Image 1 (cartoon, each protein chain N blue to C red):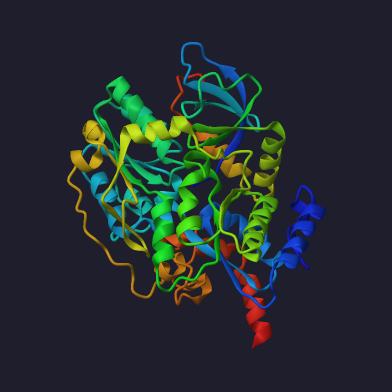
Image 2: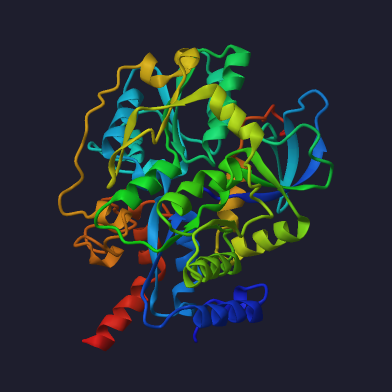
Length: 95
Length: 376
């Protein structure tokens, strides 16, 4: 439940500032950034994701370590399945 | 010292060094009981076999920080009663799907025809409502302060968009009153706490100060990697050695002392404390759960639907309550590994990977059987 998944910010949306596209181990989905302060993120930043929301920023080194731990704990597939499952920003082309 | 999963660590030498420092810090004549509050910590402790690197007199007690584990059966029944209404979809997280209610789990009721769907985010449930304007979508919300802000932002979005066929059945709970209840429990002896990492990223460290000040117990907020957890335990043990009790933050890279202001604002806008709420195993705890404020009544499932609200006692043989309070270890329950197992859970502690029983069953039971055989 408190699984937090590291993802890298790869795209902003000028028309939907509450959403950013993140990349989690090659899977790209939009997540909500309403829990972060405005202007906190720049392209290439890493965030911890929980139930479709970015919980906090995280350093790149910590993000890689966390991904490695998820793999070691056999939970990377669960994490990727969760991110792949986010459908709230699905407008037909997974923008 | 043996350690099963040592190869997986970023820096095994560092783990060994912290373990040795722990061994030097403890008083061999004393027994230590330290509670890790968070279910994510419980899972990581078993998964990495951290018991193996701790001295025998340092006992880890598993706390109540597993959302589905503390949800009483009556609330599961209430959610399933909403799902039984005509033209309603009940949306819930995967963890909820196998939690037993009186008439079965959400998954079993779905097989019998109820429209129950799994979602990964509360925003998925809101999207489902927007895409199906003639159906009502009820989101079965569970979780501690890590998850509650996401529900709050989803409700704010629903109001902003004017989506009226969407509601939230709130079962969000707060960790601090549960810790207070455990500290006040007469059969509970604890020396200190490893505080929850992600919950604290929202609420900060300040809410734990009463534990240090009024109960004289150390609290160290820690991260989820093996080194984080061992460092957190070491910091608790150092305080105990030095006769101190304060709140410390091992997980500074994620947890700001003051918490996450945007999240706290969203929580304060949408939710208020319930006068009391029932926790499985811990009973009724005052001001320990969140309900929607009256401004959000149009999106409050408990206002929009009649829920039975019947209190259901746990199966008598199951000892979930004692395990949740740390009085018993999972294998000391009569049903553990027999009637109650991950395939057919009787109690919720066996459902979630963060539940002490599921973690113990998966990673520790073989080891225990070997130990028991050796003893016999």
